[in-house]
Amino acid sequence: MANVHIPPREQTAPAENALSVEHLKMGYGDRILLEDASFSVKKGEILVILGGSGCGKSSLMKHIIGLYQPMAGDIKIKNQSIVNANKADKAKLQRQLGVMYQSGALFGSLNVLENVRFPLDQFTDIGLKEKNLTASILLDLLEMGYAGSLMPGELSGGMLKRAGIARAMALGADILMLDEPSAGLDPITAANLDQTILRLRDSLGVTFVIVTHELQSIFNIADRAIMLDPHTKSIIAEGRPQSLRDHSEDPHVRQFFNRLSDKEQHKGE
Ligand SMILES: Nc1ncnc2c1ncn2[C@@H]1O[C@H](COP(=O)(O)OP(=O)(O)OP(=O)(O)O)[C@@H](O)[C@H]1O
Image (cartoon, rainbow, N blue to C red; front, side, top):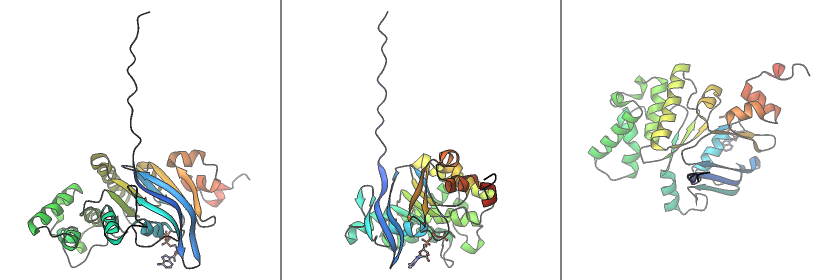
């Protein structure tokens, strides 16, 4: 038999961590929200954080971006601790993290271009022309190029979120943290925003950490989900949303992903 040459399998290097949360204990005063939580997010991955109201999703985001110090544990941005960083290093790490809060949180007295330019005005000394160009490019990227001169009060919900994302990217962040991006959007606008998130990931390699309850959106865009639980103060589920929906050993997790009422969940018991 002739020797058949089988080419070696291409070695793909494991993706690097964009961020990792290691044995995090967090809370406020006597109130502990998470006891010992660990997870990581690979570069270019879309991770969704889930959990009932008040379980600590926003608090986790605020710890990741360095607004609060953990009670114990570490948080690393591209393998560098933001918890133990000195002020200058922490500021550098924070620039790699862009945050969009629920409403987009634009300044009502500035037009859209000025809003997107704002972080550049605050934190850089580059010229106005260059800053305006950067802001315009970001608005184009978010399909908002036509809206630079509009005031936030003139924007629809979807446009506010897009402008908020553009602003979050102004300082060059390639890890975006989005707090309930689809909240308050109609289904078509929410689906369009999902596509934009996927496009930013696929074309620029942006990493996303997203807090959302929108199941459809979770199934459309999330590579992985983690679910926080206030009772055990831990991460009770981690995996692909579809796998958690169909195979999680935790009935509460299956109930969540299948969007079942308590009655439907306990039918036949
Ligand atoms: N700065 C703070 N000081 C003290 N307690 C706080 C602070 N921020 C949040 N909390 C409390 O911590 C708990 C978790 O709040 P957090 O906003 O992180 O939850 P969440 O899961 O994001 O909730 P939701 O889904 O309703 O937005 C809540 O009980 C909240 O009142």
